[in-house]
Length: 359
Image 1 (cartoon, one colour):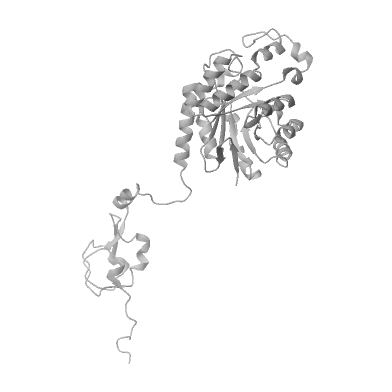
Image 2 (image 1 turned 90 degrees about the vertical axis):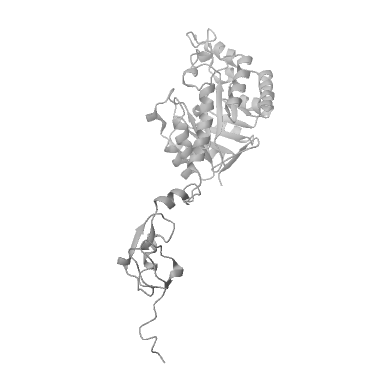
């Protein structure tokens, strides 16, 4: 059975969606803003709040780290200074982990490099996210898998061979895996999402929980993803979509996140159970509009019923039309007036020819 536990939350085909509010660096380097994002995520009903963790000097070449970085989205004169401004350290992470426990939501982070895996392990967070850009980073995948933590892996920009290679790297080490269909387009239009890949993943990896990491605008695709079998849904989250920064404009704000959680709950409710039954709520309509077998005219006792003697009329509170063969060819025990309902107790199998003179 495909199943994954993150903290005390079970994620499986028969559960609600595990909704991740991806804060990333939408806190803009401010702990107070991160706290508010956590509170709003919890209030909206999210399962988890997530950040991103980088060891910037280990992650970027010196040239990239030192390159000028100016413009509306910049928090420093160089790309390295910009990234360092947005990076939280141990004190902030420990504080937010305590806040998450208080709020009753999970908290974990994306690890972009080996030192960041160690950082998150030291804090004992319940899961590690791997970004789409690192799906081909098999050393990082293997290193993260060895922690034994649940891994949530996005697959944007990948080929199926690259997805298989990533799964084959992780599963022999750690079977606690969620694989997320994702598109590396920001924002992604409907034509970019390829939600049918969710079914491909479910068939290809039958023991793996599958999900959807959406960079699309709105909630419709997430609900469609759930119907296709996605049980982890990740969406970027902000307090204000108009803020500077690369992620704010396609992130959900608190009302939209609340709507997403509610919509996913309604989607699960609407999917219901796979067994096809007539429900108690349907029964009155079935009785009113359905049909039963009745006498087409007054029929005397002992009459041998023919197809012409039977009509199908509402209400449908008697023998069903598909039971016609159970009526035709039998004799009536008692008279049956026109529109009278046929019933098994009114019918008797006629005696074989010659039976009365036998002996």
